[in-house]
Image 1: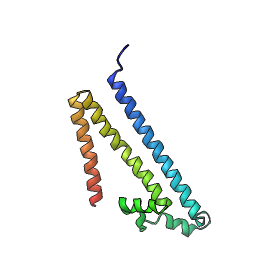
Image 2: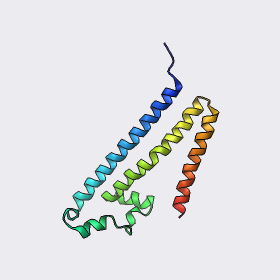
Image 3: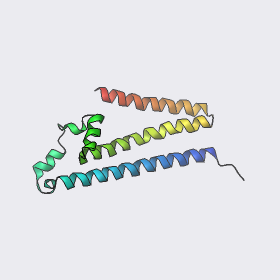
Image 4: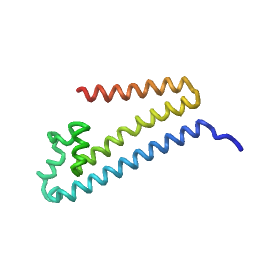
Length: 131
């Protein structure tokens, strides 16, 4: 029985992570949209009400903790934001998984390169959160 090519296994794992992340994200976003419009029928008929939905001054998207609290309260907008956060996190998970898979292959060059990419991603999130 022939051994599976390690590169093919890595590619398969990455494809699964990316597809699953997008599918989960889209599902969460769809649920959030449905909940938003079920709880707020006026968004269909009132332009000012719909404008309040995307008002940047609302606090339900100000931080991750406010998004989580809003989702606990059943706010559709917060649930949509969780879906967006899952979509943003998907490539980060992909990079972290790549590090583990390259390490399992004992491919030091790719572990180093991918680790730098992960550190840059994390640094960009930290800098973005700071201001």
